[in-house]
Amino acid sequence: MTKLLRLGRAARLICLTALPALLGGCNLVVLSPAGDVAQRQGNLVVISTVLMLIVIVPVMALTAFFAWRYRAANQTARYEPDWDHSTGLELVIWACPLVIIICLGALTWAATHLLDPYRPLSHIGPDQPVAADVRPLEVNVVALDWKWLFIMPEYGIATVNELAAPVNRPIRFRISATSVMNSFYIPALAGQIYAMPGMETKLHAVINNPGVYEGLSANYSGAGFSGMRFRFHGLSDQDFEGWVDRVRGSGTALDRAGFLALARPSENVPVRHFSTVDPSLFDAVVNMCAEPGKMCMHDMMAIDARGGLGIAGIGNVARLTHDRRGSSSAPLAERTVVTSICTLPGMSLERPWATAGDRSPLTGAGLSPPHSNRSRPVASRPPASIPES
Image (cartoon, rainbow, N blue to C red; front, side):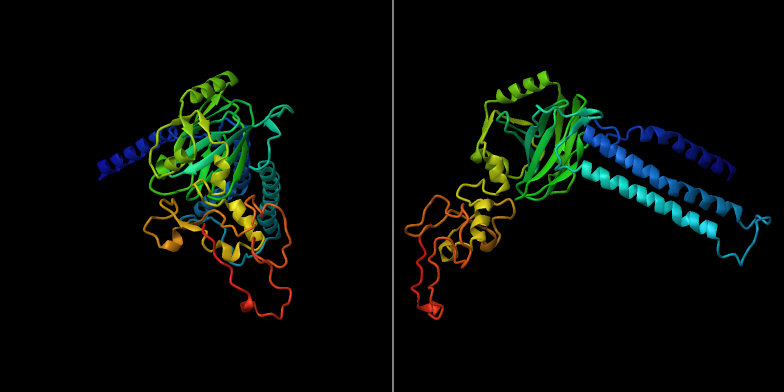
């Protein structure tokens, strides 16, 4: 038995000795990032944790002290069964947490407003304001199943699962998705922000140190989620221009047809470069009309704001041959999209809904208003014919 106890103690000692080595494999990029925004977010985490430990550490220490001090074997401990109140102790118990909560509230309120991802950067580092003549690098991000597409409109290029940016230049991300919700996250650069279909989110950030950093999706999105990783390169201005030249030298163009093929679900996709890209592609992705003949959401909303197309819009639907939001075996009602505008005689094709109009009465774009004589039955009007799409 004694030998077994010694072996048990030795095993515990070995495990405790190996613990620091295991912790050495942890990645502390969140607390030691390479971008100013992520650094300030890490500082907020550290300061908040320290403030909370002001209460947590004494409570844990006193818990252990009381358990030891008033153990059954200690016959010298004071026994006071009638003690139930101490004004001084109550003040300490309630005042300390209250002060800490006030400090945490003030700190996080100010920091979260300053670190609002939609807020353009005013500094690229401590005591380094953004120069007035510096234009942010715009990057359009599209979360696909299951890869990342990056479009850089300033240079007219696009990449898959690879991104680069010059050091100390502000970056403005415009982020969307084609299918389910994802979360765009480069831990060394800034906090995560969601990518959602039919919506555009924004993120402002800057990379201060050259290097290669990991980017990923932080929101589970299906079978290929684990492969939604990419490399983010922080480069000097000269190296960044060289990277752009290499992408332009790929000789591959990304048009609407190429994007629809790229958007089909695929896993563990290798890095791809596109030397040119359709300049209207990202806006089409946000408005969910990259497919040929599909009405854009902004047009649909403008028509709805004027009362809809009414009878003229009944036939403006078509089946989808491929829909990333459902399977081809889904019911017909789940596999239809609004297509182009059916026009009545005399109706303009130049987006009649683009300008504001009289919203009363709302009868549908392209249809005649109801008869001014309200006493006339609606059924007495000749029915409108449904034109062909």
